[in-house]
Length: 454
Image (cartoon, rainbow, N blue to C red; front, side, top):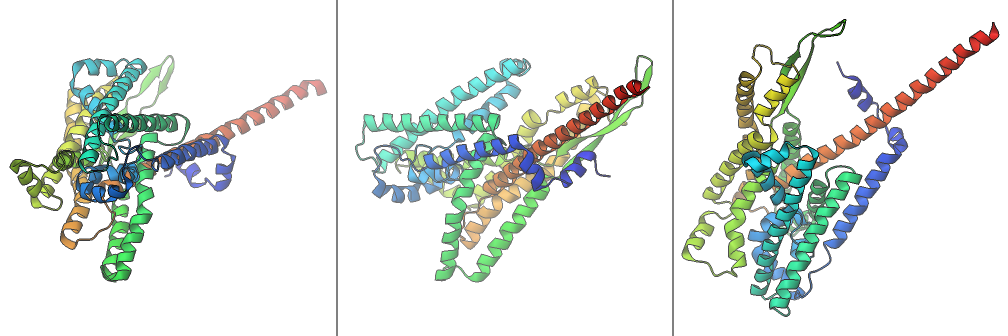
């Protein structure tokens, strides 16, 4: 039987949306900042030779462009001030989260509540500056090596690093403002918009190749059906849960005795989200990125690594899937779903799993369940991430379709829609409370008039 919240969500309409003034303001604020981000992707870094830029980016697409083009919305190919996108901030936040689960000083900070969280955010910002500076310096050197700098030298390197690092920090601030005053997660929405913005141009190029005869109509129809099926499969898997029954005992408060209640503990099939795929992609593209920064002067060892770990190669696919599975287990058990903390919280709330003793036994049972669920979750992530690589290697389909991009689009879209629904539900609850208060006032007024008539 549907709950009251589910029934209310089913009855929501555009009329309810029109009455939610605060929600509309949040949405307009979010759209305005996202437009600012898109405009910034077209502002170029000073000192770039635009004539040679496109040719260089085609050569570097397998390295830097392969991982960053998904997150920069084309700023990298245009060498805009947002060329690094928000990736340094994401990398720094993931590193801080992982250290926070393994390093004792950061563990203690996480236990200090709001003050500890602010300290961790400060460390994340410092890490963002360090990572962005290192990546911007490497990018500036690769631009000089590729002959893209109109006046190469120390001044170009310094101006390029300062501009790109400043753009990354501005994007970080933009994401935080969207999260605090807009709707949805600001960082995720910036990545989401960057991916969506590049799809129309890539789709037009894909269809134009079909018109010219380079790709058969059957392949075009097959790719479109495959994209629809993949999106449906990702949505289904992201909404899949393993529910564990939780029982709460009967409680006595004063002279009243309250009956025991029951609930469930939801465990997502993919608790780690898209983070394992991002980590695995970053590791695989590291050798190619180093080769790009070095200006093409590779040692025999580096040449061998690039030959075996090129996109579509068997070693590339095996390592990619192994890293996705490893990071799925590691990130879930160390960050996303820590079984010891969940077991302690259940014990403190007097909740227990029927047939399982609270405490250590509950943690062992949860670890057993999560381990089995992650077999399906990690396999699903590996399948979605590897499918485009296999298609490109076997069918040579030049289409803007990456598994990581699909995962980001679906997860961010679902989270944003859920937040909008939550705001609408809160607005409807406020309306119901106001109506009940007005009825109470009318009822109390009628009762006050009674004695006056006697």
